[in-house]
Image (tube, rainbow, N blue to C red; front, side):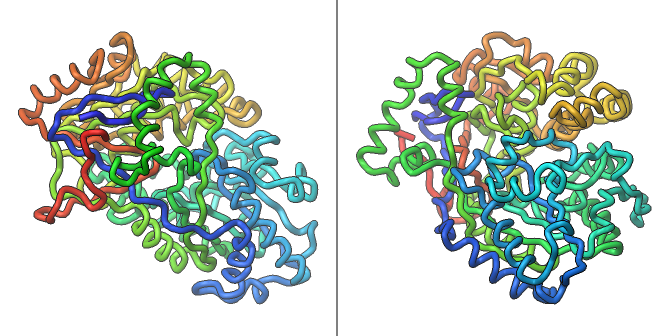
Length: 531
């Protein structure tokens, strides 16, 4: 069976066993058109869930903080205008009409420990009007290492430190504008993490949180999200927070590229021709050209639903909408998972993925995209198709390169990393300076993404990189290597003793639910031989 998938910036026809299953994401749900988004935002603030209308919460003397996510999501970025521009423009018009003064409004990009957004990135997200009115003095990136801005609010009942921006506490109302693609994001995570510090993020972004319970990608049954909620509830004792959540559909591709995410039976004749010819066409292009092509893709994501109000009241319908969009069911777990990883990560916006992200994107993200059980059985195998280039962006991934060169040669064990290296990286003056002033991810950030793989690294018998020219990257990452998929499948067969293979077609995203004994192989179909 031919499986159309990615391997970095290449699209390939991978050869799978004839009995293999290929799972495809659900088609995009109908979204709210851009022209209607401002009215839906206004309606949400006029009739919020479990809170008074916005007009009753503000007056001419109100100090307002508007927080919003960075460009880690949605990814790939949408064609302009970004939903945050449309939502915040509508919000500002409402605040002005209620008498709020512009000088009493601040906007902050809630980057947490991610890299700060550059001015041109902020402008692409928010548009000229907002930039002209607020940047640079009333529109800034959050700085988790700014001693003049960080306030300590005490601890939770479990002893987790609670720290956040002084702006959160000194505002009369915090409004968090959030576009949400997966259940990981939104809810209590927004302010508690987006405007949190190393001290307050380290307790829940820790291997202890995911060693026994895999759920980092959804709040239900998650130790990590439980810790985040405890921190959020302490913050809520000191300020009033209203959230606006836009639950997004999964239109990762513009219409002409959607054949990449469809089974053949859902494709028209032209799309079937494209599916058959794309790998050969891509093979003629040099890697540098393929990189530019894929980095230029703009998604067509649209919100399916928009709600405003209290965190708890708003996030519940958001999670249900996301489940309606993401759910794929199957009747059993598989021996081996094959996944072709594109050169795409929320932490590589503007550059290519580095080797650490190759592993964490699959084991920390994709492996954990399930509701009840993982795609594969305990003791199963995951095969990652990717060339794994040893490249680290000189601005963004300074801490990642140091992690690659100094931590991984010593250990791949998350608990050893935590005890031997975490504090050193988090407090390193050079890495702190790179985060604060040079657009780098925080020194702690590579640890967080590695920790999310704690459960699958224990759960799986083997992880195999298929595609790198040598085994160097695999050895450094502590996993196995195969020169190609055929050899990787052979290794997997030896390990599991079975040949029940499932392959995923991502993007767009999907969340698995295993319904033991359910009729049929999957809710959205098994691949045909053409993939």
